Length: 244
Image (cartoon, rainbow, N blue to C red; front, side, top):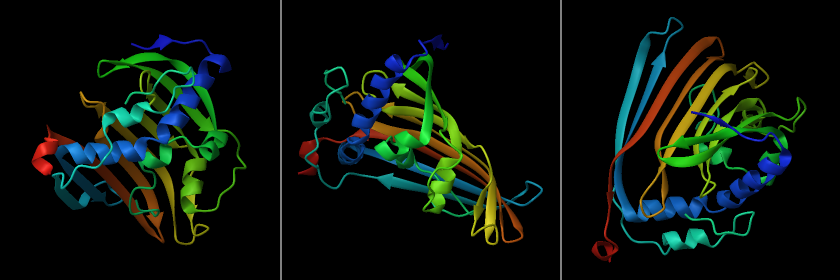
């Protein structure tokens, strides 16, 4: 159930500033999670022909076991302050595969300027309160230096922001217009839907529970349809003493 929120920049600005601050902690968060947890990650990629028939399927499962503890305890993520002064607790760029990763959605000052944000409301997600924010390109004439820039500049969608940690816990986005590769001579992508969901461990680490995306495009003259699904399971905390 989505609770409506005040549609004002005053309500939205602190949330965006919190997400900006949290983005600086994501690398430490990922290192810490990998240091203290073992898990399995299954990745399934399906390639389809123009009729939608699967012509190739790749299924790979990676098993992660920490090799050593890094010096990034969850308490370290509480060092960055929220905007209100409180503590923050803790692809391939072609038509073959993924064009956007979670890290590309982490809010940076540059990314901040590329989008127009709208606070939609509040919603519970996995038992935690979140802010729901829509985003869309701020202009049709945004700077483009790389293929990824062309993707991001034409992306729109919705993100869910954890109200306690300001972490992105869910995202859904899509292309608003086709993206050409090599000025259209090498290929083009005319449909790309991407989403992920994250969960928080009891001791404060965030991790990707699942990622999925769907791409439709053309490579030279061959139509490409690719579906990808990634899921993390078998999560198990590992004692720091056992790794020393």
